[in-house]
Image 1 (cartoon, one colour):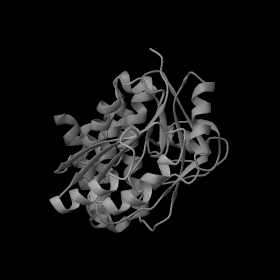
Image 2: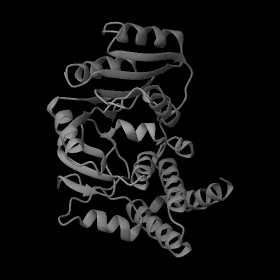
Image 3: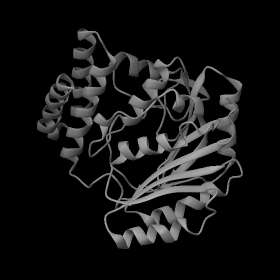
Length: 300
């Protein structure tokens, strides 16, 4: 199969105004052949706004599914992967509807890494947050791959978004994958389709590694994340509830990808301590999430 072209996959829910601001930035790049959209709305009024937004663009470059309802982030992303599977694209970019691509050279740089190294299955770029968002995601911009070493040692995902290009254990949520990876069946695990979706990308990237590929991070390619608070697939919630879903999903992630009982226990304890150090007053939510994550894995 001869693969060519680049497809960008974007899910969107109840944010036509946001998509209106961001969609054009992707289509300005001559490297982008198609933008695939799974667009959902809670009302006919919102759906009509979406129709006006996507209707302004070339139907040959923008392929979309519009519907009433809400699949959720994970199912929407899987629907996009099913749309692109078998279409022989060489490159596929995972993006959010509130990502702006300021410079098309970012995509060009990512494609060059995939062309240069056959063993690399995904290339990640930097996500620069334009809005304010309080979230227990941890970045350790340490030299000598120390962030990756700590991720292996402690079982919690730490991202170094400063140093590179380098082979990395995990990538930020803006990344490009080989089209062949999609055809080999990588999909988002629907267990992570929870109110926060925490670890959905980590699990997706872990699947790519288990296929025999490596992950490469390059801080030069980047997108601007508007971090819009309204609409979208992530409902508003208290920080305590957010911490609950974070540790619950992380516990499932730990159990899924580790067979050693000792590792599972070690990683679970360390993860709980990390989150307790970050938000000690949410101890109830943290231990509840730890318990429920383990119970959910046993039932899976």
